[in-house]
Image 1 (cartoon, rainbow, N blue to C red):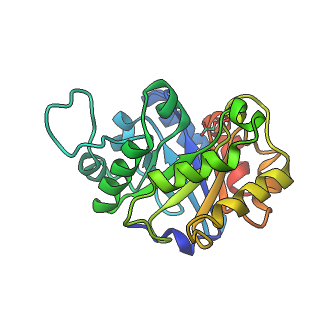
Image 2 (tube, protein in one colour):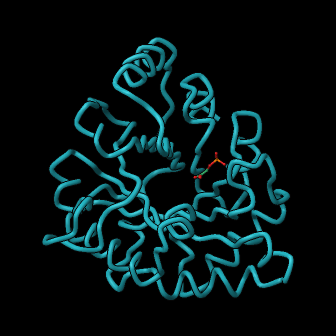
Image 3 (cartoon, rainbow, N blue to C red):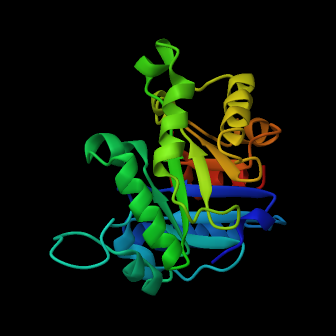
Length: 242
Ligand code: PGA
């Protein structure tokens, strides 16, 4: 398992349902020609799982998946287990992304099981939490985050193994974002739930190269989870170097 606590910054690319073999080849041609490398940054690329075996990436880049099954084996058509991800050289795995929670009805309890399975296979889970716009308007953001943390963090979570990503759902893919002060204060709130002071907490939702540095300079932010902007290698390299 990668010891996540040793990195200064963690920057993860969530490609979602995007990419092809041709896209991957072009992406890394571009990537390698433009890269000058950054110290003590953990960069994670999360392509669709079917492509995990088509990557040969080296430190400081690591490979991640976007989800895994809560089951380890059996009659669960279409599922991919933590062991299968491990055997595909996967080192990190996003779980509980709001798109999986909302579109595929995943619950906190499912996410906890997935995270446990991943840790048992020495894969670092990136556990996503975040409120909807309605919850924010109602003033219930903190209650929502607290419930998600209490119910989806596995018992075997440690500062070495787990990354938490705070992604306000209304900020994902929308170009909208909380203010920097709001992001810092929510991260500080999360760090104070259940002794999470030393856990790595990423911010996600409309992160681009032109706002990544300001976000990552915040005291309580340990990195970013990037969707749309990570599909452009020049953008992602700029974010890695922010
Ligand atoms: P976005 O997505 O950067 O396109 O807003 C972030 C995410 O869904 O993780």
